[in-house]
Amino acid sequence: MSRRNTKRRSKSASGKPAWVWFVLGNAVGGFAVFLLLQFGVAGNGKGAAGDRAPATKPTAQAPSEPRFDFYTMLKENEVSVPPPKVAKPAIRGESSSNKQGAADKVKAQVYILQAASFREAAEAERLRAQLTLANLDVKVESASDSRGTWHRVLVGPFDNRSRMAKARQVLAEHRLMPLVLKRPAN
Image (cartoon, rainbow, N blue to C red; front, side, top):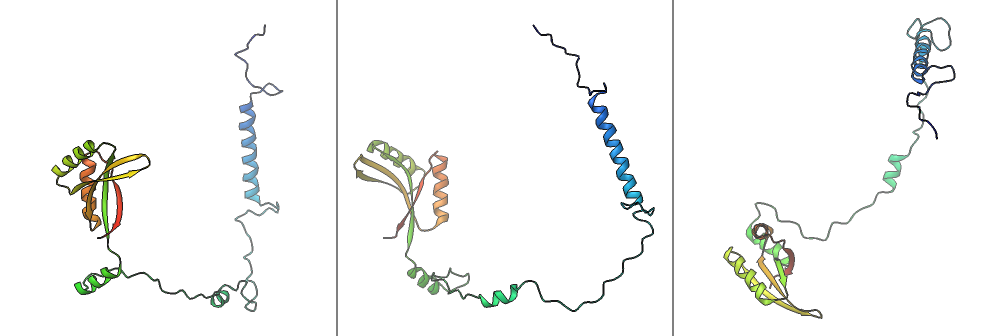
């Protein structure tokens, strides 16, 4: 069996602990840097901030050519961009006839919130009654596919986002996370 020596510490070959050598090395290195800065790297006896002769100004040279052709390259590679083909948003203060003309150009969209969908019609009707009591415009829509018939509880339609956001907040109070559907207006 081997014995553990818990009092054993890392020591170098001369018997001194490693931290002593670390501190001693840093002190000697710091002193050497101090001397180099004090007397200069060349060791000519003058300090780094000592009696140096002021540097002479370089002689005036002829202006040289620019190293980069950035500005000329930009002018050569100029690209014209056509204006966008989307309708401009309405500006405040426009007359109502201008607003109505812009609204006719863009297809009218309505927002509908799908509160939930159920396989059972009775569950969908129960939720519809609960949301109707919360003063929402609710209807149940049935859809069939290969998996069966689904009854979707729809809230809306809303013609702007602010009304939709208010209805969404009411649905959140009823612990429902609605799906936002965008449909063309009828």
